[in-house]
Amino acid sequence: MTGGSARDRRRLKRLVGRVFGDARRGAQTLLTPVPIEPIAPVPPTAVSSESKLLKHSPFAMGFYGAIGVLVALGLASAVMQVQSILILVVLGLFLALGLSPVVDFLARRRVPRGLAVFIVTVSAIGIIALGFTALVPILTEQAQSLVRNLPALLDNLRQNRQIADWDQEFKIIDRVRSFLTSGTLLQNLFGGIWGAGRILANVVFSVIMTLVLTIYFLASLPSIKEIIYHLAPASRRPRARYLADEIFSGVSGYITGMFFIVTVASVASFIYMNIAGLGQYSLALAFVVALFCFIPIIGSSLAMVAVAIVAFATSPTLGIVTIIYFLVYQQFDAYVLYPNILKRTVKVPGVLVILSAIIGGALLGIIGAVIAIPTAAAILLLYREVVQPHLDAT
Image 1 (cartoon, rainbow, N blue to C red):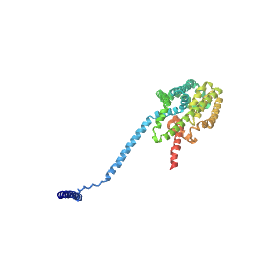
Image 2 (image 1 turned 60 degrees about the vertical axis):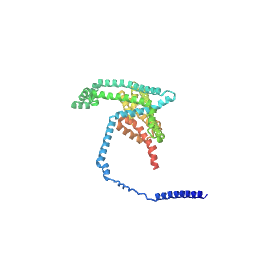
Image 3 (image 1 turned 60 degrees about the horizontal axis):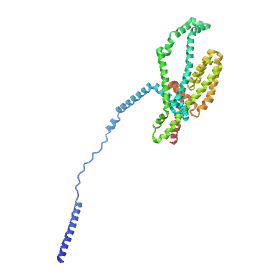
Image 4 (image 1 turned 90 degrees about the vertical axis):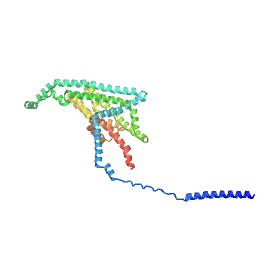
């Protein structure tokens, strides 16, 4: 027992010594300071003013500015070179928007859209062909008649004593006859036969291109609208769709209303001319009235002049009656027909209508005057729906 107890005490002593020895060595290890390696100092970041000076130097700014000016001039030159094509594209789109209500009407009656576009296109081409078929022979006949009767008409001027005295002194009638028969008039008006041919070719090309573009836009108008809608971000797409639909509706309403106004004007003129005794020219002159009435502000006056010339050639009394008729019809058109048809589609003040038509005519000619009013309506819509709410919010 004594020996066992001694062994146990020695084992316990060794265990306790081992535990305390490990603890002492651990404590010494923890308390021994670890040498700290020196850290190299970080060099300060140098902010050089030379980089800013070189980056924004007058030379660099002038260089980049010159590049921007050259690019802008190149784009402007490219737009000017294709200006006539762009005008035809815009005109074709406007005509397609004007004819789209008829296509939509047929489509709602379960007519396939392709067939509806075909029906509308054939009808429009038929009306235009009928008008030119009636107009061209009369113009040709009148031109030939003028050439045949021109010498006699000039000789009749000599019966007037004052004109005879002037002709005897200055040879006016002989100079006019030589000027008209020498081809100088054609040269001055059209640049000769080659110039007249170029003008005729440009007119034919413009008519064909406008017709093709109108048919294309009319057939693919829904897909074109969807492409325009998707140009806006997804979060603003409903608002963009609303604005685009309002613009399309305004343009379509204006063109459709103009078609109706022109139809009423030409039909009324056709009826008047058959009653007044101009039946042989009624169809051709009604077509001329329709063409002129598409021009805002001055179109009806130009139509009155064209019909009155033919009426005066028939009878001075008939010419005066024709002028009175057109003056009365202009009042009906300005105060009854035009406001009631367009007041729900094109909300443009009268002053802006006049100014937009004048500015559009000065910039792009007759086509500019035609598309100026719906363009002004679209700009006013964007101002009311986008700019004005933003201004009111701030």
